[in-house]
Image (spheres, helix red, strand yellow):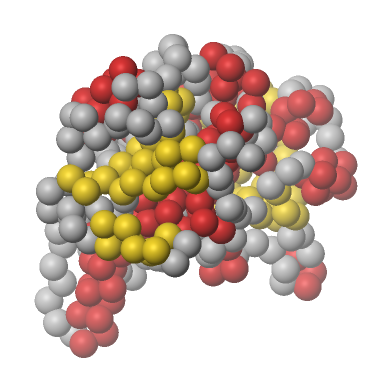
Length: 333
């Protein structure tokens, strides 16, 4: 089997560290693995297949001889370094938002639109975590009966913001229980024992950037600009895994039973839907798992025809690192 020189950009972040683990777990055919980060993180060491790899400072010439680069270093890093990588002959799979809506860059969820990878010109974009798990649940329904509208409320863990947010939740929780003063640095308000109805900046239309991503990215992935998605994205005081309450207006009627069968057959989706036994997807159970879990499948009481779903997924895995590596696996095929 051919092996590849692979680089992880942003290797010391929460997603970068997860990429390192998943590459080894899935036995991706790596010839050499290089880890890059800013000067602040250069010198750190990580293990890969029993060997220590030292993180290097990212430079303009870092991509010589690199076949595939997995980017998770932020939008400014992607904006500057991705074109340099492409010039060096590297294929970039970018986990940030900078290239997602670029018409020249495919936006890929491998189970949903693998055929789009053929359109790449050196850069492939990984969708937003909340979009990824939603379209995984929507795709089999969309193919079967079509979808007109989606209303979604998300319950997103702090790991979606990064390591600093995880530490802030820990510190605020301890301080709150001790009765000490609460310090806020990452979020505009206390996150411990609280929920924040804001993820990203607000647009003039009143929707946040995260909410607009769910609309625009869903349309691009499904190649359907007629789908309307109205989302309210909320940060909740959990450490890992996102949950979504999704209400769907379909073009044709479909029963909950038929929906369960479709979802159970779809790759990467697991149905947990026995509410009479209190069995439904939980964020705690999704941590460290690759699947997108779907439950609470029922007929919607507003949309006719329509469905309501509860969807849970580990945002650091399928929502970010795993999907990026699945794109790389699709690429080398």
